Image (cartoon, rainbow, N blue to C red; front, side, top):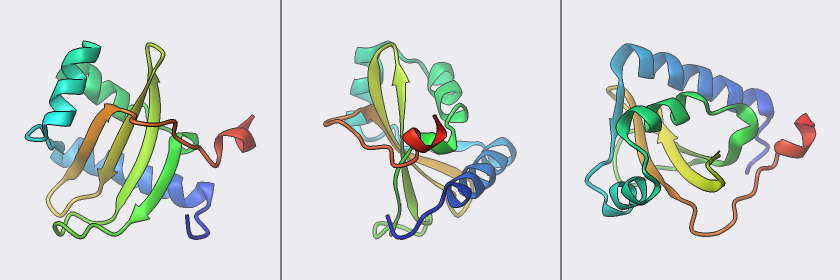
Amino acid sequence: MANITLGDVQKFLDEFKVKARVFGIKYRDDRLKNSASMFALGINMIVREKIIYSIQDIDYSNGPIANTLNDDGDLWVFGKDHSGVEIYIKISLGANGAVCVSFHEAESPMSYPFKNQAE
C-alpha cells in the first residue's frame, strides 16, 4: 500500500460503482476458483452483485496493483463477510466496464488497514 488514503479508496469505489451501473460488471466466471467458491457458499449471481455494491472504503485490503495480464486497469482488493465467511474480491475499473477478477473465499486471513480507523 503506497500511501493510499481512505479518500483514494472512496474515489475508486465511487468511480467503480458508477461505471458498473452504466456498463455493468464483467465477471471472470471462467476462473474455476470463483465459480466453485460461489457454489460452495450458495451465492448466486444476484447475491454476488449485492455484495460487490455493498463494498465500502473500510473493506479495502490492498491496491492498486498493476494489472499485467490485460488493459483493464489497476486491481483493487477488498474483503466482505458473508455468513461468517471472508470473501476475497478483486476489482478494476476496466476498459469497457467494471471488472470483477476474483470473488471467492479468502485463502488466508485478510488485512484491512482502515477498518480500525473507522471505529
